[in-house]
Image (cartoon, rainbow, N blue to C red; front, side, top):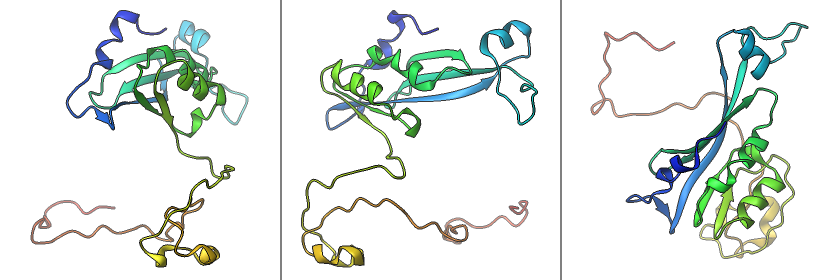
Length: 196
C-alpha cells in the first residue's frame, strides 16, 4: 500500500538550503517492524524463520520509504509482507522521485534495473550508493596529488600524478577509539553514574 499521489507533492517542494549543486537530496531505505500477533496479520505479513522449525513470535512487516533529506518529509512509503524484497518495493516508488535530484541508497539496493530505471525515467535524476566490498572498478582519470606521503607504497610509480585513490579496504582499529574533549569546557559530573 502506497501513499495517494496527491499527498506526495509536499515532499518535493524546494526549501532554503534544500539542494546540493542545484539537485534535491532524497533517500530510500527499508525497515522491518513487528506487528501484533493476530492471525490475519500473520497470514498477510508472514514472519521470519528461526534456527529451529518454529516461526518467529510476531508477524514482521517490511517498510520501504522515500524521504526528502532537506525537509525530512516522506514522499512515499510502501508496506509489504516480510518475504518481499526491498528492491522490488523501491522500484514501485521511483515515479515519485522528482527530476533534478540525487537519491541515496544503502548497499542492499544494488540493482541494475532499479538504478537504470531511476536514471532513465526522469530528467537529471541521479543515484548514489556505497560500493560493495569486492566491486570491480576502473580508474578513469589521474590528477596531481597535494601530498605525496598519502600515496601507498604499491602506487609509488604513480607519484606526482595521483589525486584520488579508490581505497577498497580500511584498517579497522584493534581497540575502540577514544574521544578526547576539553575538561575545562565540558567538566565531568562526578555524581553521574559511570559508563559501563
